[in-house]
Amino acid sequence: MLIFVALLYFCVACSLIWLACFPSGRTLINQLMFGMRSRFGRIAGWRPGRAANLLPGRRDLQGRVDYLLKHMRRNWIVLAIVVPAVAIPSLLALALRTPDMLPGYEPTEALPDAQIAALLQGEQLVPPSDPPPLAFSTQEVVQVRPMLVNASRNWGLMHPDFSQRLLLAFKIMKEKHGYDMALLEGYRSPARQDVLASMGGAVTNARAFQSWHQYGLAADCAFWRDGKLVISEKDPWAMRGYQLYGEVAEQLGLTWGGRWKMMDFGHTELRLRGVMRR
Image (cartoon, rainbow, N blue to C red; front, side, top):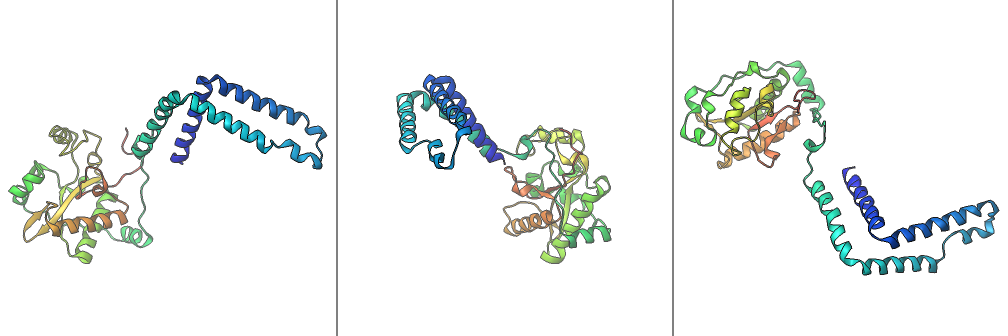
């Protein structure tokens, strides 16, 4: 639909510019309109044997096409300026489009399949025990995720629907793929969000209330292996886990940060309609 609108805009804009810039274009339109009025004026006396006379002849059409091409060659400088001026903004908008660019857009919630939905409704999963506080202050963790030691890992502050989906993702990752998951951060206060945003785009581009963390609908997670948190994507084992985690999360109706331009492999969120006001 968006492609059709862009093409329609391009055609209409080119036509209006052509009519505005080229007097001969207006003359051609007047001739066409006059010819149509003449033909429709004779419609009352139409007979089947005269049907062919109502259609323009091949020579007539060829003459109009030749006239149009001659006119375009004569004004090629104007066309070389006008066409890119109309086409480039349309093509850029089409190439750089994102759903968030649409006014009033709110992402729709993806629904899991029937089997997963039944499991979510029938079983209340219990959060696992948190890793010890020292696990969040190691050199490896601090290099990848600064200020993580003070992050909230309180499952009770997260939205119940999101926390159950996240816990189910943890369960699937453990039972199906053999990965133990750990929650790094769930709910995030607006003040903490602003502090992290002030550290630069490498940490986050979202300020207070621009992140789903402030609504208890986002979480950052990593893996627990041999008594240590494994966060870095440079670890092949962890990178494979992130890919599997993204697949599981999306099956549960969550949005996975691994598909963003600024990839955040451990991040998932549940975008509920009407929650985030922009």
